[in-house]
Amino acid sequence: MISLISYYADLAIGLILAFLLLSLLVSGINEGIVRLLGIRSKFLWAYLRDTLDGAETADGTSRLDRILDALKRFGRRARTPLTQAGSPEEGRSRLPASVLGVFARLPFGRDPRPAFSRQPPPVESPPLAAAADSVAAEQMTAEQATASAETRADASADPAHAAGQADPEETAVLTVDPAADGAAGGVLPPGQGKSMAELLHERLQEIDHAKRGRTSIADIPPARFAVAIMEIATEHGGVEALMRDLDALKSPFSRPLKAVWDRASHDLEAFRRGVEDWFDGEMERLSLLYRRYVRWVLVALGLVVTLVFSMDSLEYGKTLLRDNAYRSAVTAFGQAGPQALEPLREQCEPGQDAYACVTDVLSTPAFVKIFTHAPVSVTMDAADGPAWAWHGGDWWQRLTSPGHWPGFLITLIALLFGAPFWWDILRRVSGLRPRTPGSTPS
Image (cartoon, rainbow, N blue to C red; front, side, top):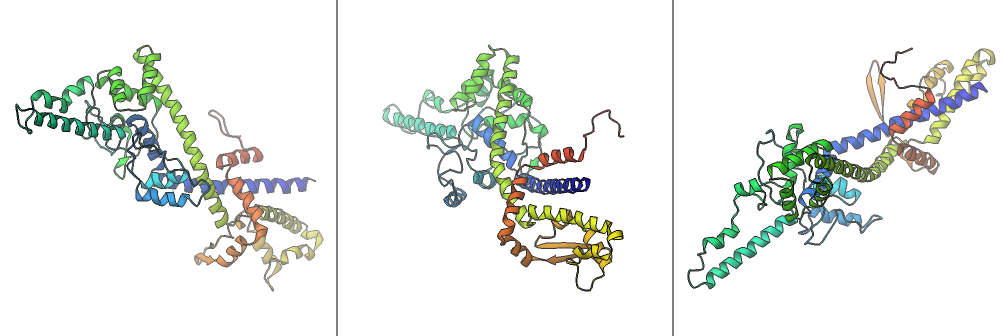
C-alpha cells in the first residue's frame, strides 16, 4: 500500500513539474514577443492618446489594415474590426478591438507613443495644441481654412481695399499669440504646441529610456499621473482653464476631470487624490482588457509548445508509473533473480548486456524523456560534445496518430492555468514552504 502511494505521489510531482516548466516556456516566449515589439507600452499610450487627445482621424485604412481585415474574414469573428471604428466626424480609437489588432496592427501600424527625449522635464511647458492625427486637429484646420476664405471673400467684396488686403481687425482673428495663450490657457493649431499626451510625457521623461526612438514607459503610477496633471494645469492657468481647453479639443478627459473637480469642491488636494483614484481604476480596466487579448495568444503559444515537444500527458503518466515499476523490479533482483529484468529487455537492443541496459533505461528519468519526442534532439557527450539528431519522421507520426490527441489536449489545457498555478500546486504537494523574513532554515 505504501509503495502504491509512493507511485502516485511520484506521478503527481512529475506531471506538475512538467506542466510548470512548459508553462514557464510559454510565458517566456510571450514576454519576449511583448518586449521585442513593445506591445505593452504601445497599448498604454494608445489608451492615453484616446483619452487625452481624442480619437484619431478615420481617413481611410492602411495597407496593413486591409490585409488584416482580409485575414479576419477567414476567422470566427469576421466582422470584428481591428480598431474601434467610427464615423469620419467622430474618428476612430487607437486601441485595438481584436487579438489581431493587438499583435499585428498595434506593433506594426502607426506608433502611438511619443518620441523619446533625453532632456529633463522643461521648466516651462509649451502651450496646449491639438494632436496632429486627431479629429480636433482636422476640424481646427478646416475651420481655419473656412475663416480664411471668408476673410478673403469679405476683403474682395469691400470696395475700400483690394482683395489681397485686409484690415488688422480681420486678420487678428486668424493669428494666435502663443505667449499669451500659454499663460492664460488656449489651444493652438497642430505643430505650434504639444498635445496633452505629449505634455504628460514631458512630466515623465526622467523615468524613461529609448526604444527605437520612442518612449518605453509601459506603466505609470497613479500618484505620478495625478501630480503630472496638476503640474500641467498649474502652467496652463489653472484647472478650470485646462478643462475649458480640453473641452474645446473634444478630449474625453475633460468629462472625468470636470466630475473630479466638482466632487472635490475646487480643493486642489482632494482634486489630486480624485485624479489618482480615477487613473488607478482606468489602469485596472485596461489591464483586464489587455489580459483578455493576451489569453488567446497564450492559447496559440501553448498549442505550439505542446505540438513541438509532442507532449502527451497520458503517455508521460504511464512512463512515470512504468519507471517506478522497473525500479521496484530491480530492487527485488536479489530475491527474484535474472527474470526480474525481463520487462526491461523490451527496451534493450538485441545482444545488449542486461546490466548495461538497466543502467541506460533507469538513468534517463521519465521527465527527461518528454523532451526526446521533439523533431530535433541533442545529446551531451563528455568526449565528443553535443550531438544533434533529427527525428522529424517519428515526430510527425506522433502528431498524426489519433491516439496521442487526448494527451495533447490535456497538456494544452494544463498549460493555460499558467506557471504561478503549477508552482503553487508543486509547493503544496511537495511540502515546500515559502521563507518569511526572520525565519531560519531548519
